[in-house]
Amino acid sequence: MPFFETSSTATPITFVTKSSWDQVAETLPPAQRQFARASAFAAKPGGYLALPASDGTIAQVLFGLEEEDARSRDLFRPGALPGLLPPGTYRFANAPHDARLAALAFALGCYRFARYRKADRPEIRLVPPDSVDAAEIERIADAAMLARDLINTPSNDMGPDELAAAAQALAAEFGASFSCTVGEELAKNFPLIHAVGMASSRAPRLIDIVWGDPDHPKVTLVGKGVCFDTGGLDLKPSSGMLIMKKDMGGAANVLALARMVMDAKLKVRLRVLIPAVENAVAGNAFRPLDIFTSRKGITVEIGNTDAEGRLVLADALALADEEEPDLLIDLGTLTGAARVALGPDLPPFYTHDETLAADVARCAMKENDPLWRMPLWPPYDAWLDSKTATITNAPSGGFAGSITCALFLQRFVEHAKSWLHVDIYGWTPSAKPARPEGGECQAARAIYALLSERYA
Image (cartoon, rainbow, N blue to C red; front, side):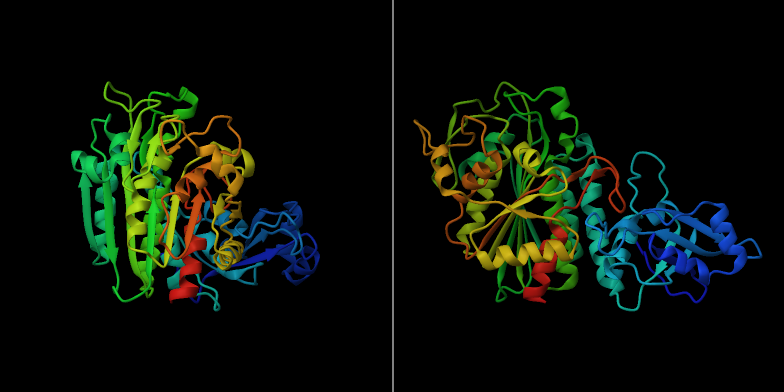
């Protein structure tokens, strides 16, 4: 959707902090200054006030930000504006802390999920600041909204088939090739994907998208597409299933990232692999202590059927790795341990590539898309040992769950020149500026910034 337009009559938005408010107030016409004081406007972060003109229209808007040096400064604070402003076109009268991120936050704050009930998007537009690439902001915002829409759609309307249809539509939009391996066709070459999805009445599948010049560096994205996770026979409690429609958040985010890459025409040969399944309960469901031989030939003992995401990713990673990509990235909503350690807003990432790690951390900071590196700690690799198979998918003990998941996936990556694993949450539990409650685009913006730097 369009977020920006050019207008000579746009209403100005003036950003203020508590320390700058007195100075700004002195520049206001006396009537507006008195109105602000009568309204007890104090420039607190998120504080909003529309100042009237003499004819009753809005002369300008005041909006409070944190101080420049505040440790709790939220660079997405301007993302609250779309929920406050009346319809119209606006411009920034002065510079927020980061004009580009403020413009992006403004766009992201326009999001509404309206598939099942009326939720009109705000009829507002922003004149982009002179220093901002409006097309790039719209590219990122549109992709983020794709991820949010996919995650927010309930599982009855977002099963493996519907997820594949969304991926196919994206591939068609950008002239990419699309293929899909479905149901029993998976049993021979992708046995772990088949095992997780075989109990559902909705057939599992492996989605495969390829785009770009074959001579360009190979970048492969793998996204966990568990469209609903009951936990399998190790059944989750009802509270644990409540937002499991988001368990395909890795898939949603790699599709968002792929959209950014293709729309920007980055110089890569892009491949997107999504194992799309539903982890259901039925008489033919896979069981604890079952053993399956993965695509890579590694035998996997099932320690817990609720550790299914790493299983489907393993087969997809093995396929991706066979091409020896220059950069292999996987995203998945994988472990509660990551949330215990870092909360919902700060996904951990893992890599042995020190240059990649530094670049990811820097891009995450720059894009206000936070990520935090955690170690692929070698001593814990032994925890994956099984007495009856090569490895188990769920070590006993419960310690370091996100790390052991990453170490499990590492077993299936051998030939890629560089590998990055991100354990995302894909969900905003309570609304914040630019981030409404519900499905969220996590890690995709930071990784896109990284890819743009390397392959623009």
